[in-house]
Image (cartoon, rainbow, N blue to C red):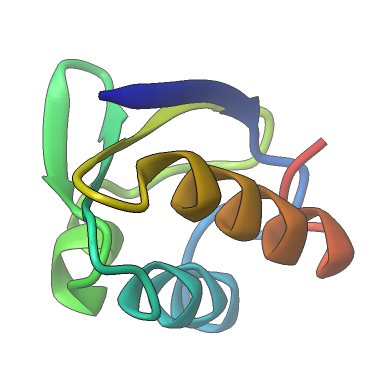
Length: 88
């Protein structure tokens, strides 16, 4: 398992548009990808799961990947979220 802790900097947090960006990035990975916030962990490939966490701006979340492309999955997701200015 590979994981990374990131800080959400999008002004509205991880809702609607930024959540869609995150889910699309995770969905391209073969590995199981999860996001955890405040003791809850959900499948990052599920828009409803990600939005159910209610992640606000300035929150720290843990993104984890388990599977054959876990290293590449974390790197790709981080790259997309940084490019979209969703994470710091």
